[in-house]
Amino acid sequence: MGAALTLDRSFFDRDVLAVARDLLGGVVRHETPEGVVAVRLTEVEAYAGESDPGSHAFRGPTPRTRVMFGPPGFAYVYFSYGMHWCVNLVCAPEGTASAVLLRAGQVVEGVDLARSRRPAARRDVDLARGPARLAQALGVDRAQDGADVCSGGPLGVLPGHPVGDGDVTWGPRVGVSGAGAPTPWRVSLVNEPTVSAYRVGGRRSPTRKT
View 1 (cartoon, rainbow, N blue to C red):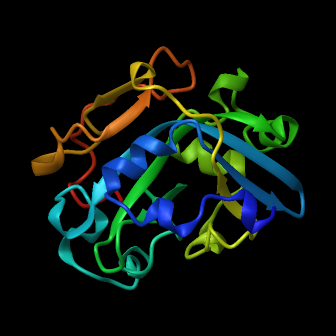
View 2: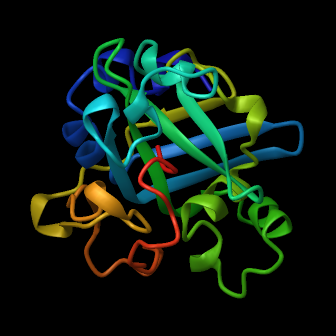
C-alpha cells in the first residue's frame, strides 16, 4: 500500500469530531503475512482526550496512552476487558490526545480471511460489527499500537467514497457511563446493517474507552 493512496497526516490533524465524521466511508486496510483485509468504516466514536471524561487520556499521559499524546495519524490499540483488541486513530494537534475509535464496518477486501479470523460470525455483515470484531477481522493487536497509518505501511486508511450528510446520524457513545455518557459523539451511517447495536453504559467506567 503506497503512501500516496493513504490519507495524509493533515486529514488527522483536525478537530476530533471533523475527523470522525469524515472517516465514514473511508477504508482501513491491514496487510499481514496471511493476506489483506480492508474494512469500509460505517461507525466510529470521537474522544477528546483530557477534556473528555470518557477518554483513556482524561487523567493525563500514561505508558498505555503515550501514543495518544503524540502526533496525529497513528494507531492507538488497547486491550478491552482482558479479551479483545480495539483500534483507534489519533487526531488533532500533538498533545491533545484526541482519538477516534473504529466501531464497525463492512469487509470489502479479504472476506475469506476475515471469516477465518471470525468463525463465530454467522453473516458477513457481522464480521466487523463492533470494535473488537473489527480489530479481529483486520488482524490488529498490540503489535499495531503506535503504527503510523500515514506512511504507506501495513496499516493504513484510504479515502473511500464520500458520504453525504443525509446518510449520517449522531448519537450517544456506546457503553460509556458517568459524565461522558450523554455525549453524542458516535457517528454512523443511516440504515447500515453493519453498524453495531447501541448499549447503554453502566458496566464500563468513564475512563475505560479511548
